[in-house]
Length: 412
Image 1 (cartoon, rainbow, N blue to C red):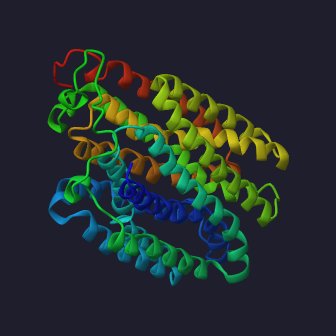
Image 2 (cartoon, helix red, strand yellow):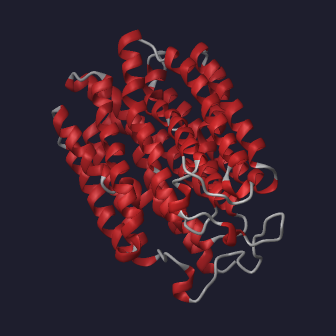
């Protein structure tokens, strides 16, 4: 592995850090903004949903036109655009202004963070892809843990408006210089190969994996494509819950420092979870790794809904980290395992819409659960069932995927 491979991983890691900082910090703004401006939590959370929903419609376009515009120009323009979006939110006083800001952010937030980062890992690494994907998400967990420790105290001392300015500055710092000095979309453009290309990946019949990759047009005709989309959609409901965890902990009369500590424990746990899930997935069957992730999610949700002890919750946060962080690592790997990597960008540009849709719906739903019942417990019980369902969807795609049987494209 050359220095350029390490730099490309670091470039992708900075993009994930930017996404985690922006995404995880949002949860700390729910309580102070709704209390100061008089919004309901469900109404306020809708701005986050508008942001992710906007990304749903933009992502397929990015997947189609990225070869024409190039990753560098996309990242420079998108990084500045999103940073200005957070500046806009710092001056917002009405709901419609938050909603407009959410749409503004959504145009480039996902395309220049998660989408580009996953694309870089797929372009630059063939061997140890699971480990690299795990390390990628772990870097985001590290950034999220640091921000989670800082943000509650920062908001208490300087207010939520200055909090948005802080996010804007950090986002610009992690994206614009990255595009100017580090980002290289494809190793072939500078005379290099993806790490592991010299060891051609082969299936059980000794056929190269690339030879068995499914085209985007064929994938759309297959049941596993749609079943996997549903599973990815449901797995994102956990991300919607994360937006409300700080408010959930605050409702238990914990101090802002304790709330920040609990949230940072999730982020720290994700560092371990993401690396472990990626490394384990490289060594054993994906179905076993997936089963462990789902079981961790169900166990953590049960105790989260029934426990008010700070010490017990501190332990639960590490279990929850595997349940929440696992899908972020496994999903791109499972997509490539089911359909191959020959037409991965276009396939992922569609399947990658599913978590955005799930996040856009789940955020307000979690807020509505609290508004109606005064607690998040019912939502946590429902999420236990959804976790099992999404696990079944993933397993169906893995077992019935086109690369698991003789290639025979049929209509849906």
